[in-house]
Image (cartoon, rainbow, N blue to C red; front, side, top):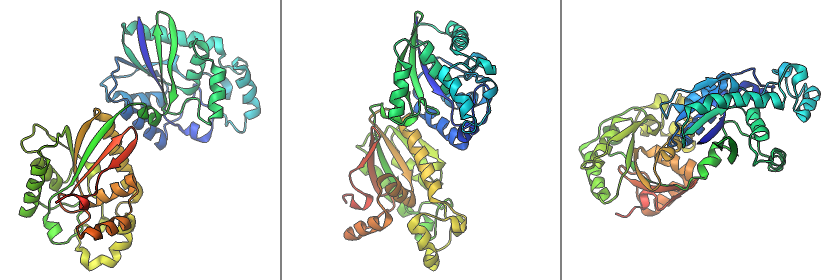
Length: 415
C-alpha cells in the first residue's frame, strides 16, 4: 500500500513570536499565524485529500481546520502528533535559558528534564502512524498538520533517504528555517518504508512550483448617476444611467470572441449590473466579492468632489483616506492581495477571468501590482487625451508562474 502525506506545520504562535520553548505546551496563533494558515489553505485548495489528521494542540487544530474547510473534511486529532516533548524546559524563554537548552539540543535527549529522546519520539510517532494507516487504502493522500520539531525528528527516525545533519547545514547556509510556519513537505509511505519526496517549503515557494497561467480581463462599471453628478462613489452606490447600460452593451459586443471561464464582480450593484450585461448569452454566473469594491472614501462618500477638491487631492494621490475615516493603503493592498491569491489558486491553468470593478481599484492594481503611480498614469493618459480609467474601460493582464504582465492600459485601448 502506498500513501502520500502532505505535512504542514502550524502557523506562527505567540510563543514562536516571543521565542519561548513550545513543545507539548500550547499558545494561540498570532494574526500573522492566521494569515499564514490562510495562505497555505489557499495554495492547497485544489489538492485532493482523502483524510486530515492533526496534533491535538490547538495551534495545529486551528491551522488544520482552515485548510480542511476547502475539502469538507473534519480533522482527526491525535495526541501522538503533538510536538516533541521538551519536559520542564517547555515554556522557558529560549534566549534566557540558552545555556540549559543547548546541551539538550546537541544530545537530542530531554529525558533528564522529563521530556523525550529520539527513541521515545520514534515509538510515539509509530503509534500515530499505526492509527492513521488503517484509515487509508492504496493511493490515498493524507494531510497531516503538526509541528516543526516533530518533522525534524521524522527526518531522523523515519526518512532513510535524508541526511538530517546535511539538511540542517544546508538550511543554515541558505539562512532558511528548517520548516517554516505553515510550510509544506511531501513524503510517502509504501509497504513499511517512509521516503521524503519534497523538502519543506513556504506556501509562496510551493505556489511557484506549479506551472500556471491565468488571464484577467478587468472592466470598470458603466456610467452611474453619481458619476454624472460628480460625487465621490466608493462603498456607496448609485444605479447605471442609460448611457452606462449602453457602454456595457458596447463592451459586451467587443468581448464576444473572448472565452471567459469565470467572472467576479464587486458586490456593489453598479458592477453586478454591468457584469450581467457583459455576460449576457453566456452560461456563466457572476460571483460577487466585497474585496473588489471601490476604495472607501469614509465620511466624504457621496460628496460632490469639485467643491472639496483641495481636501481630496492629498489623500487621493497616496490612496490614504484614513483622515476622513476611510480606507488606508494597507487595507487596499490586503484585499487586493487576498483576492488575487484566492483567484489564482482556484483557477485552472490558462483560464480567463473576468473582473468587473471600479476606477480607483484599477489604479490601485496598477500601483500595487505593476508599480505604476498615479502621477505616471495621468502623464501617460494626457498624451492620448483620454480618461485614464473611463467607464467600461478594459485592462488585460496575466499571471504566469508568479509574474504579472500586461499589454496596454485602459486609455491605450484601441477605439
